[in-house]
Amino acid sequence: MKKIFTSILILVSVVSFSACNFTKFDGSRTGNESQLIMQYDVLNMTDSQKLKLAAGDILRFDVVSQSGSVDIQLQKGEEDPIYEGTDIPTSAFQVVIQDDGTYTVSVTGKKAKGSVSVIKEDAEDSTSGADEPVSEME
Image 1 (cartoon, helix red, strand yellow):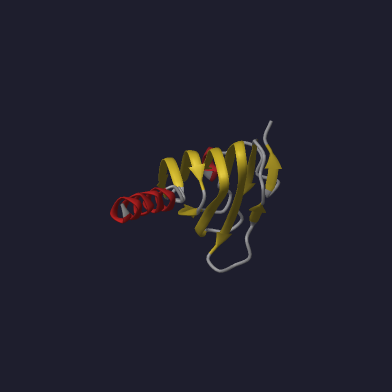
Image 2: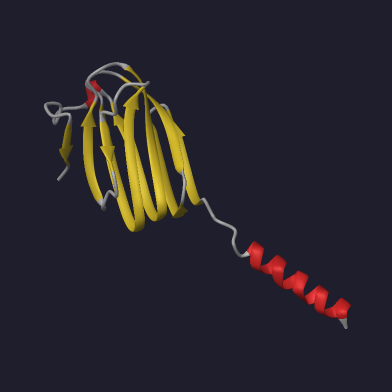
């Protein structure tokens, strides 16, 4: 009888501890030197992508926030961030790059579900919006 009780106790303990598994990411991600595209059912971590950008390039951000919260940061090297947003709602906006260099875009989710798209538009392809560093897209 003790063996059966001990076996059941061990089984219940194993099942309880395995239920505590914390999913960090469930979704898809594509990234390269000019874009970061993420779609996720679960995002509980920070993901970063290095982007090679030139002065005048425009980064277009599209955020869909279905639940939880998403923070985004954009910075060049160790400099102060040129964009930093916390608990970003569903929105679209752009950031105009002022200096050539390698930038890091970081996306942090907390119980987040949705998507984030950051896509570079080359300076020579841009025809409008280059006046303001950050602006809302319509």
